Length: 267
Image (tube, rainbow, N blue to C red):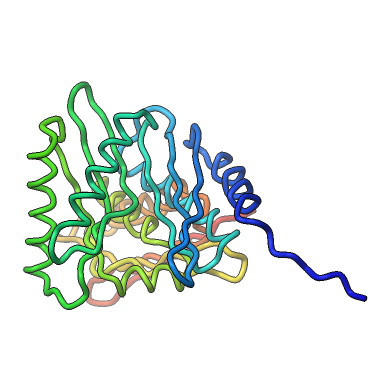
């Protein structure tokens, strides 16, 4: 009689996720909760990060965490809370979730990052807005959430809101790469003031489980061939070096004729 193959228990899965997440560079500690939200698994990861990383580095760490979670629980909803891991961070996380949940037009906040500089607090999070809202209405919802956060806690001096719709969220879960990698790339672009994204990054999972990132970039003014090549090469290297889950970067420079370069991770 064949022995049935048993699915791992929720506790076993959480322990496996925790081991993988704690191995991600930049993670000091973590807690994992598996939540029941209907048919789709929901994994909630609370991270304590090493040091005081800025938003760009925090997004890179969270992208790595997102990647590791989805290896074990494919097509899951992944929510990440990150910061120094102290009790005060937990209070800010709850405040963001409560205000976002109660704001008309919002479907809640997730992937919340809290950073502290002295007595000031910065908050960076994803805000899911209702699909029927247009750009203007979605922007107003985000502005209201930001205003209410600052009013509720005077220590909050900076709020960065990344808007996404339910369709964005579902697409992210289906393709299995999350939103964090896209945000990481968008933050990286701040290092290259002469470059801009001509269209949103395209991120796809490859057969080996790692990610391919395709970027279309443009210069606001012609920098000359040598400087353009240097900027594009620098962007490629920065994207590759910051997130170990990225295996290949393809950058197309949009001018009259796009000039495509590819960088592939070896080993």
